[in-house]
Image 1 (cartoon, one colour):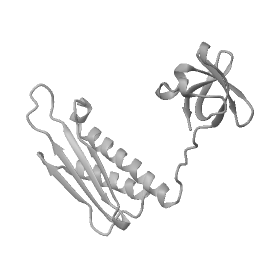
Image 2 (spheres, helix red, strand yellow; image 1 turned 180 degrees about the vertical axis):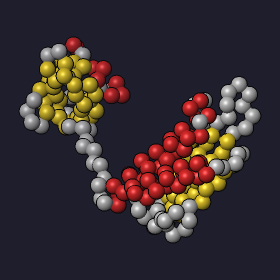
Image 3 (spheres, helix red, strand yellow; image 1 turned 90 degrees about the horizontal axis):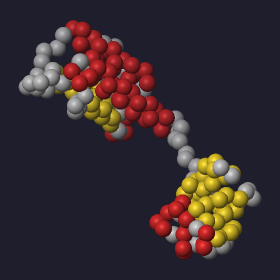
Image 4 (cartoon, one colour; image 1 turned 90 degrees about the vertical axis):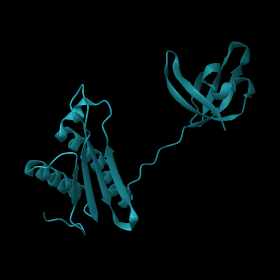
Length: 186
């Protein structure tokens, strides 16, 4: 197999004998991994057939261990549990290599500097507080008024709120306009 890897991929079978078809399938999956991330330095695939399951067929587990530059590794370990789909070797292989591809895609994104940035929750101040009625209104930084109920304040902190307190919040569309589903004092 023509690879860009520094070492030839290792394929190990435990508990059963390999076949040309299985070896070819694994090599094909390794080639797909190299298309996703061309800087794989080594690859080791261990396919195991668990023995002695009396009620159902034996299950296959697959571990794909990849070494990347700068000491990074990717390990996709698809050990079966009660998943009868893994009685089929090709399903076990597919699942393990799919997991490995996903991890390599994440590494490739990091390498390109494409890191997801999650926006924080929006901020607001407590504008109106009607403690006797168990609700109030937040004033968002863009001037909108958002209803909130006692139960939306985390850690039972409604009674500690005061008008003018800064909070972060998550909102949804309520029956009468925007409504805070979570309110957290800053």
